[in-house]
Length: 492
Figure (cartoon, one colour):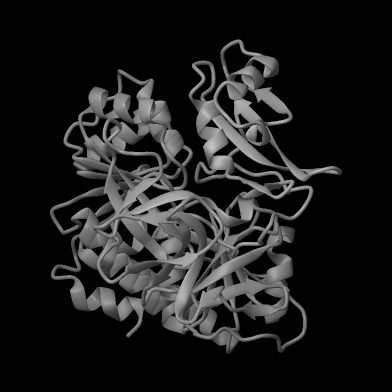
């Protein structure tokens, strides 16, 4: 059964409003399925399709493209609307010609046939359809009903997790249960839906559970999110860490009726989490997951009781174990057994397999497991720094730097060194006055000599991705063990 059939089988009242845009447009479940069927009909005359890609600034159009490609049984690649086509061309080239569904450019005429394609316009939606060109043939995807979510991975080369629609549905239902979605639980989504986190929690999970969702886009400030919450009567918010950092400093926006809010992509500083819950009164939760497995844990944030790295117990249907690895006592590489695993990675040379140990996904995360099965993340295998044979976990150094009162964020990574192979270096975000020498002395008082950063760059803020994850520079030399390629959807 595909996504459209699954939705149709679960919705008691298909005429009710399913999706709202903050601009005021609304669609019922019937309306969404009707729009998808219409788009699919416009694409069918093009013959058998190997791949489609969607790049649009309107989340609801991503949803309709997802439903239409599900009907056509065509894999769909999800792209950032601000992403240049060249950044994913190397991936799509392996799969032959494909269709690109994108926002129309100025001057495009609705329904006008042109050499490059057409503009489809129905139900308040508008997508330009163009062919990639090129010859036929190319690699095939394991499942014709798939979603491909792009990530640079650990190598910096374009690739994407290939997730079957069945895996996406199971993952979405799991998330809906964890978040308490039902027809009486309106949701506001401020996470980008071209990433798996927003796509699952903000599109598929609400649709499959009957929860109406308001899509307000990710480039919004707290006052806009608060307006969407009030206008829709939302009880659940899906947003990004930077949204909550902004909320922590906002004492004027009111989120009346909001009961719980979910974050993923990067840790929320404990001070910001405390300020958000105290000022605005809703519970804050954190999701840990990855593009290869989907959501792994959903845990209420407790700034007073949580230890660094605590992400909670695996969701039902997920079994976590440890694989022996170099790290702290009792730590090992986290492995997962779940039916929601991706089929592999889309690369320039086709679909590559996941990094597996038998049937278990190797996550590349160093972790400890509690007696109750709860997961505590320690670091990343690929980020471990080998200083003359001594292993340095950058997470430990980052936490020491972040404890300095002038520092709001820290990132530690390896730099090649002729004598010791690698040494740790750092960059920190420090809006207040502090020098690199002061921070070096701070570390000298708290860390062993080989763990002290040899160089620290002080900046106003660290570069982040659209999901709030700190962007790492490409390392000058490989780490001691190249861990699996993963795009983390959440962390703690």
